[in-house]
Image (cartoon, rainbow, N blue to C red; front, side, top):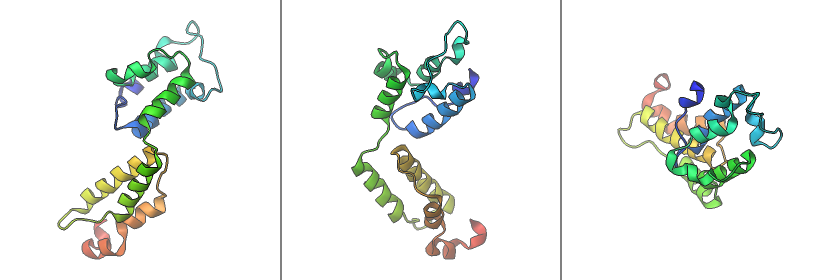
Length: 156
């Protein structure tokens, strides 16, 4: 049970990282299929309660948001509700984030590490929205010609 305690609790700004973390824990316990309607929940008399998918999910959500699924007993339905409320995937949001990514420039005097962190935030937001940016574009945006000449290739 300690594995999921290391995951930041779901809140209004960390859906993608929360989902990645909770998925790993549930897959390790052979419980991920429950979220995809391809397997029924294990019998609690045969399966340790601390590894019950519902308990893991509920315990990994900030208390104020648990109300969203408090009346739901069906795991796939609960996952759909969480996705609906927390996954920011509107077309306008995706377009805005994509534009922000491709127009992101290093600020005067900004360290390359800080610039990379700003890019990473946009990349995570796009992933949250269900539209991840390809690795090639990420690398290009980070090391495009204007950035390399300023820092030299040895500093990246």
